[in-house]
Length: 88
Image 1 (spheres, rainbow, N blue to C red):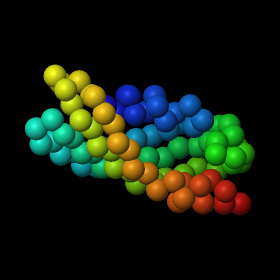
Image 2: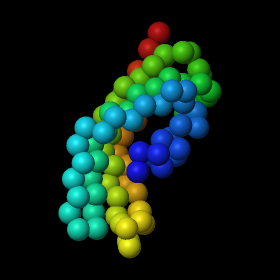
Image 3: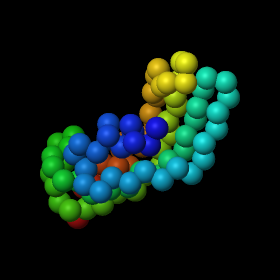
Image 4: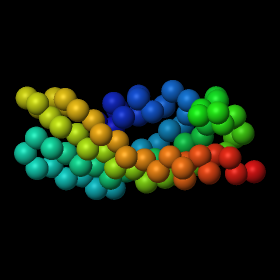
């Protein structure tokens, strides 16, 4: 799960780190609480690469079918991430 998430998110970021804080599973549903941190390496959401790092909390919910991920629902505080990346 972490490898998939990292692949999906790492494109504009250098040294993207995802730390699993909590993981809960009930039946075919999985909830993961993460700490996401990294450094911008290119333009993202109109924000230029300034070398600033960020660290935000994240929740991801997964639905599984036959032991494989069928749906992913990520929740990230994008405004906090943008605020941190635009700090001078």
